[in-house]
Amino acid sequence: MVAADFTTIAELRQSLIRKALRYAIFAADASAAAVTAPFDSGGVLQELPSGYVPVGFTTTDGVTFSGDLSNSDVESGQSSSPTRSDVETDTQTAQWVPQETNAAAVALYENLPLSGVGALPGLGTATWTWSRPKTPPTRYRRLLFIAEDLNKATGEAIYIVRHMPSALRTGREDEQWTRTAEISRGVTYQAYLDDVLGTDSLTWIDGPGWRGLAPLSNEEQSVAITGGPTGGTYTLTYSGQTTAGIAYNATATAVRTALAALSNIGTGNVTCTGGPHPGTPVTVTFTGALAGTDVAQMTGSAAGLTGGTSPAVVVTTTTPGGA
Image 1 (tube, rainbow, N blue to C red):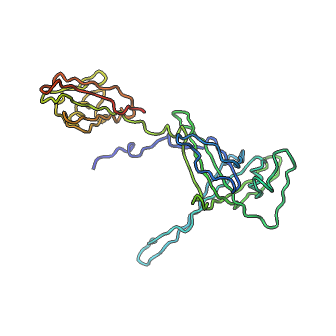
Image 2: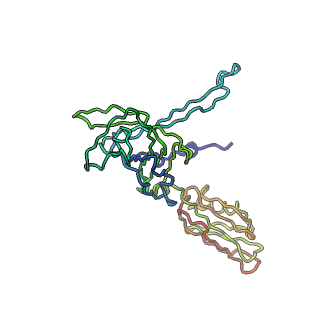
Image 3: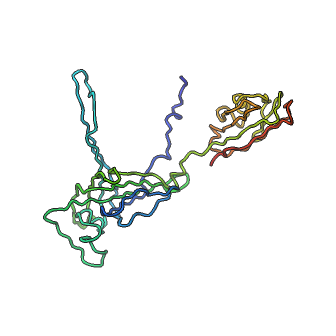
């Protein structure tokens, strides 16, 4: 087996550590449209469907997504560990504590509709009043959570979007009135299966900053021998350095060896496929320290080739690097 380099196989990438630098919670009645495409094909965040209202400021604890997973195990006399295990339940909840006294925060806490009959009137337009019904209704909501982070290299936004298309209030915290803290109305909502979407939760990650994390393309250049030479050698020049003579009928391995011998390329920074010459071009791919880079295009000299009809070395860039 080949010896491994821990740093290489671990792939530790600070750029993939995400934080919710900003986040927002939105709620809608079950009659509102579900969110199915929060981004366009280019990763641009789209407007929300009609009926979604923001919850506003929350405490610094943010949003906590919790899960309850339970398994059913089969135990056998011949084994000290279960011989079979099946998932029985796998539920997800979201918990947060709003700090604003707005229509969404109150409605989610008091189990009021967000629109239509029974909804609170516009802020400041009339008295807000509600009462506890004798039989509380079962009121499903559509919940949407959006977190914004940044791509450190580009400064562009990365969004994490989670949608619970059918969520039900399953808990609420104490509402405390005191001069030393805001009146808060903490709630917990559990996600339930939506018959149309076939799931209880959808999550997306996208945005211009996310697209910026895509690996940059490695440059590929094609080296072709024309004119049908029958002997001799040719050379390739890269950024001012020229290879030793390369046989007219060289394999891809021979071309790679010649290029890797240049000090401005080096071993491990180029691969070659295709060939052999002169009938088949060799594709040179810049890798390693030259990966994802728009490198200089090589030039070729056919001065050492013999036979054939006006043999030439043609180098073309087929895939620009760094794109």
